Each structure stands twice: as C-alpha cells, then as structure tokens.
Amino acid sequence: MQEHTKKLGKNSACFRATADVFAAAICFGALAFCPASMHAQQDPGPRPGPAAAGNFFPTLSSIEQSFFSQAAQRFMEVDSVSGTIAGEPGSGLGPGFNGNSCAQCHAQPSIGGSSPGLNSPQNPIPNPQVALANLDGAANTVPSFITASGPVREARFIIVPGQPGVADGGVHDLYTIRGRSDGGSCNLAQPPFAQQLAAHNVIFRIPTPTYGLGLVEATTDATLQANLAANQGTKARLGISGSFNTSGNDGTITRFGWKAQNKSLLMFAGEAYNVEQGVANEVFPNERTAIAGCVFNGAPEDSTNFLSASGSSSGSAAEMSSDVVNFAGFMRLSAPPTPAPPTASTQNGATAFNSIGCALCHSPSLTSGGSKYTGMSSVTYNPYSDFALHHMGSVLSDGIRQGNAGPDQFRTAPLWGVGQRLFFLHDGRASDLLQAIEDHADCGARSSHQNHEFGDFQNASSGGCKSEANTVIHNFNALPASTQQDILNFLRSL
Image 1 (cartoon, one colour):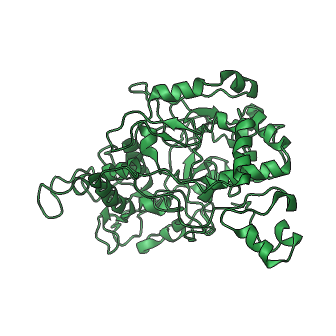
Image 2 (image 1 turned 135 degrees about the vertical axis):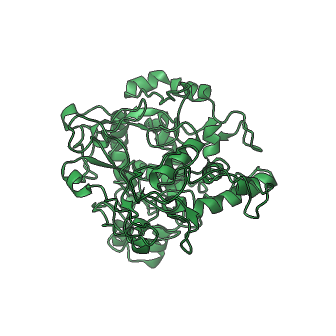
Image 3 (image 1 turned 180 degrees about the horizontal axis):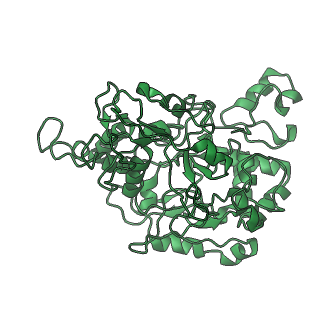
C-alpha cells in the first residue's frame, strides 16, 4: 500500500529556507519545530527521544509492580505450536495466526504500544510480519498489503466470499502453520487474499496501544455518559452526536478495541490471543480452524497454572496465572504515556484544538472510579477520547458491524501517546497526522492535502457528508497555516 509520509529532509521547506546548519538543527530538535512561517504546515513526525510510555503506574505497591514486571515478560513471550522450538517457549500457535507474540505487534515506542516500523526514532525495524511468513519452515506467501515499511495489520472480510449479502466481519489470519517444523501434517491453506482484494472485500486493522488502560477500565459508565452528554448544544451545532457500544450480556458500556467491542481487558486479551495467535484460552477456549491434522494441544491451550514451574502450588500470582490474566494485568497496571514539556506552539495548538471542536470527541480528561489497585482510584487522566462511537462517514467506513457499532462507526481513538506513533486510523492508511485529520471528513469539508487509494469503496452508494467530524475539519482547514502547525505540534507533544 502506498504510504503518504512527509518527513523533514534535505528537500523540506525548512532546509530550502536556509542552508545554515544551525537552522537545520532547530528543525530537528526534540521539541522545537521548524517555524510555521518558513513552510506550509506539516506533521513534524514521531517524537524522538526515549519512549514516553511502557512502565507501571507510579503509585503501585511493590507487589503490584512485581506482577507488572512478570506480566510484561509473558507479553513478550514468543509462541510456537507446542512450545518445543528454542527461543519460542510459548505453546499454542495456530493453526492460523497473524503474530507469535503480543509484543511483536504492540511495540512502538515500547512494549505495549502500537505497530513498529522503519521510521521509529526509538527502534526502527521492518514489519515483523514479513519474516514471520516463513519462520521455522512455514510455507506462507506474504500478502500484498503486508510490507516491510509497515504497518502490522490484520485482515477482515466484509462479506462471506461467494455469498453476496451475507456479512462476515471476522479476522482471516494471514498465515498458517503449514510447513512449519512443528506443524506436523497440517495442510491448512491461507485465505484467498488476492481474490478478495480484487473484490474490494478486505479491510484492515492495526494494533491499538495498551498504555494506561487500567484507568479506562476503572472509569464508571456514569462518568462516560455524563461526559458524552456535556456541551450538547455546541456538539449539535457541529453535527456531533455519539453513542456507546454496550455488552449484550449486562448492557454496560464496552470500551476496548477499534469499535469498542470488548467489555474488559481480560476479554480484550483473550480475544487477541485466540484470534491473532491462534491460542485457545480460558476466555476463548475453542480452537479456531480446528481441522484434522492441525490440532496438537489439549484445550484450552492457555490455562491457569495450578502448579508453579517448580512443581509447587505456592508460586507467584503471575507465575500461576494464565497468559491472558498476565496480559490483562500488564495493560491494567501500565502508566499512561507522558507528554512532552509544553512550548508556546504546543500551548497555542492545545487552545486551537479545543476551540475548533476536536476536544468534543477527543475529551482531554476523564476521572477513574474506585480501583482495587494502589493509587488508581479517582485519578484524573488525559486520554483525549470519550470512548464513544461516532459516525465517520464513507471515507473511513469499513463495512463491518461489531455490537452496536455500524459500518462507519468507530470509538474515538485515544490520542495520548500519539506523538510517538508511526501509523494512524483503524487500518494504518496514514503515517502523517495531517492526512489522518483530513480523512475524518467525507464531503466538502475535506481538503486536498492528501489523496490515496483507500477512499470509500465500501459505502460508495451511501452518499457522503455522514461524518460527525465534517464541520470540525472545515474549521481546521479555515485556520491560518501557522495555527494548523501549532495543532500538529501539540499532537506530537502528547
């Protein structure tokens, strides 16, 4: 897929304005940006310097900190089919899979983040899904939408192939264990991606960051509902409404995943382990694609460890808990990303972000409810999300329904940590914040900053002007270039 990435470089306006080395250094400073008066607005790119996320919540007790550290090791564990390959001690991979470790996909700017990539200032690496195709002798072909430049992706089919009008929406794993040295006689074929791409029947999702999610999980439904109900007059004038996805079991608000389809971090972890790595677990205990010759382990493959590694029944909580409990604990106990110190530009950008209406969906602050974890009760945090669903129109519609979320509805993506992310929007189509902003609109509000191949092929017949962000994007495009630059700088400071 063609990426539309703007980078500071020798041909940028900053460098054309002056050949002075000192001026170039200013452009590349960790928090200082090339002055807006010297060039048109542009994304300054992922923020350099150390990763501003990835540690435990600072008020946790020593016992909770220890659990977090042990859970992080599980998050990084590499899986093979039966745990028999050196360096791949985890068990349960496949029969179909997209990755072999949580940390393989959640890696930028640190463990627990989003997709890694070559443009990372912290850890530039190619998309690990490319090498994964043939790891340990696997006989997979890399799909055309998986490239070294990234991002990490999963693929879903909109309708069931060969059955027009029958909704699919499920993940179709990129690879199978066919040919692997530990795959036995499994002969499961890869899905027909080339055929379904030609039929415009494939959509993509990229990994969502997992930092700070214990605070989100601990936020009450009443708090989220009150936040969504606030400023109704202003929201109505801008065409913003919003609603929540809810659990079909107890009716409470669900809040994790691109369409807020998962209720809890345990469910989020269990689904990902089963769908992305093919590991049956205590939340999702049944093997996917359990065809003859492809099932090697008892179910569930990941379960509570009643005896510790030493054979004792008195191991640590992390050691005796299942992988999915550890994954959920790692996410639940992690600290939110730390923003960069403010500058005049980022402060101006924050003011403009609020004034044009961005903050009406990307809520700057929420407050957690009561939490069982030390110091995490009644914490005011800054996710820049209302965790509600909003109609985003035909440009972003993916044709997929999940719970109450319709084809063009997505949970407001939290913006904390966006300063060090490499890819944006649900499918990773954008590596440039300016493009990501413009893609929120689906009609006349849209500017010509960026054009690309994704477009609105899924809902072409439904008409435009359905996005709740249209007026806000119009407001953004009406700002002076210097103020637009301040907003981009503000976002990269988060």
